[in-house]
Length: 184
Image (tube, rainbow, N blue to C red; front, side):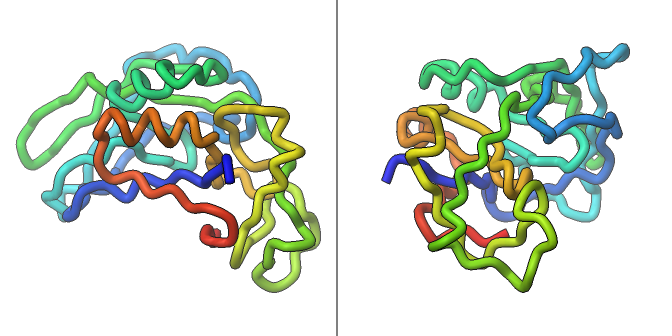
């Protein structure tokens, strides 16, 4: 088993993002144009006074802490665009600049549809399939280290090499789901 779906659950309690930029085209696996105004602005939700987590997979523009970027680069991941970001905490007034907005370039269609379990029926297995239990067909990954799953673009898939680099860096909050474990 060499591939995992990566999710950052964060330390508990976690401070979710309340406000994030809305820029079309992110999460589609394509290169996005450089936003005119940087840093991109994010605001934590003041109702949840927890800690920020290492990576937020915001639907419009995801962000990650610099420690995650360093671990990904050490693992050899090279298909990510990074943009400056500012993460504000309205409770403390702190503005952090140690986060980057990120765009993963590359969608890979590698769900093993014969052994994965879908939730209900989907009119299309590409982009929006809901999985009860996802299994990756590793022969279809092309050896990619990190990518979005073409069948469900909310799933970020990483190679064991990336998992090991993040784990070795001691970055808290990540969960790596193996075959049949991820649902989404």
